[in-house]
Amino acid sequence: MDKTLSPKLRRQENISGYLFLLPSLVFFLAFVVYPMVMCIWTSFTDANMNSNTADHFIFLDNYIELWKDPVFLKALVNTLIIVFVSVPIVCIFSLWVASVIHKMKEGPLSFFRIVFYLPVVTGSVAVTVVWKWMYNNYYGIFNYVLKSTGVIDKNINWLGDSKFALWCIIIILLTTSVGQPIVLYVSALSNVDHSLVEASQVDGATNTQVFWRICWPQIMPTTLYILVITTINSFQCFALIQLLTSGGPNYATETVMYYIYYTAFKLYRFGYGNAMGVILAIFIAILSAVQFRLAKEK
Amino acid sequence: MKTNNGSSRAYSITSILILIILAILFLFPLYWILTGALKTPAAINSAVPQWWPQEFTLRNFEVLFSKRSAPLFEIGSLTGPIIPGAIRWLINTVFMAVLAMLLTCITASLAGYALAKKRFAGRVILFSLIVAAMALPKQVILIPLIKEMSALGLYDNLWAVILPTVGWPFGVFLMKQFAESIPGEMLEAARIDGAGELRTFITVVYPMIKPGVGALAIFTFISSWNDYFLQLIMLTSSSNLTISLGIATMQAENSTDYGLIMAGAALAAVPIIIVFLIFQKYFTKGITMGAVKG
Image (cartoon, rainbow over all chains, first blue to last red):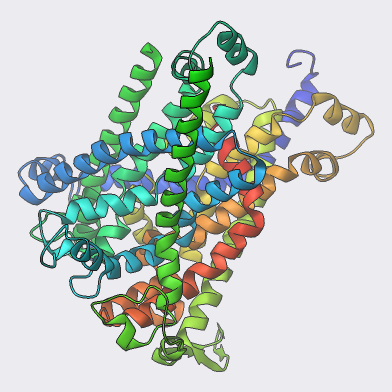
């Protein structure tokens, strides 16, 4: 089709293409690309809130300081724990739910899909404040239920105890993360080639065999996509921390995203915060690349 | 064969039972918000939870609406009548989410069509840039955005939240997926009929990508409503807050009055949940199409 166009039509294609793109491109360049470039640039400076003083180019000083900053290292470790715990659980859980519900009739299917998606729609603030109440030391239902069933014998200050706080955060994160993967897996599983499934059943394959040999390879692209988005989401865990623990107690729930916020908006060290942002982006890129690699090998 | 059937039936019955228990657990926080909002302070602050409120009260909403106040609107020096702050926050949130939704749908459907169907120079590079940007953590660009918005004079203004939402490339990506399916012959026919570019877009392209626009609209509306981090760093003054931000602020100030905070949470969550329930079919479609690799 390309080559059949006359030069005049070709020019028209170019011009109209750009005109259609223009409005979107203006927003994209101004509010996504430009701040990304600025993020990388200011990570090499000592930029702060004060716009009267010029920013000094300090090259890698921020990055060097980061590796000596115990809070940042703690935040990085916590973030990695969150990612490595929540990503596999989200994937396995949502695949299991999807495998049970995708064969259901339209009514129950959308009921379950909606229920698991609701925590996402409810919004991070509303979800977080109710969990804060449920975790509460005196009025929370967790202490009540666990105590009355005899699991614990005295109240636990869930969010105030460094042994539990991070796990409490992870539990909330899990409930707000499975909605989208379930929707994706349901649609992937219902697109699996049915004739293959039937053929293998005729040959006497068990349900488990059918699943791993036939379905699993076909939903691999979906799994990969889910791994990537869940990784990105877990890395960016912020609202839960800011509203529940502010990184405490004793940095037990400090995450990179929260520390970026703290550095930039409490300490006003924009350059230092941006350096952390760049490191975070690099970590996400590496993990996504590894996931792509692993998925390809299989 | 028979035993296989028996065990698989046992498996599916157990699965469904577990699923129902999980569904109850997932619904519980929402139930706790809604009932908590209607409980008396005594019921809230009791060590033994009331699974169903023994006494219903609107006290929490009364406190919520009396806490702060703000003018209904401010346009230049013109200010509207004074209303409860929480209502103003709700109006702000609707304004923000609707404008973000409209602008995203218009710009993204134009751009998605161009990327899918126009053979202009630089198209592949541009599309790669869009996909690459999508894989980056969105929140990393927020610090530079603050400085940019201050320079534009938009700091502490709802537009500072709307503009970056419109710029986020997911919408363009999604609309390109939908526009791919438009047959080239239809566009050709419109051209032969002498329809101009914009006319072709409105009469031929738009009707074909309408389900996609619906999906994008609901997706943008919900994610913009709930984008707490962006709202948190851009909006500061009491009359400019969104509902999420307002509740978060109240939570910081009265962190022990859970009844009040649940009333706020209910006010923030119920409208968006209703919107979601009405349009959830489009929503599912959008999520699925957005994942298909282009």
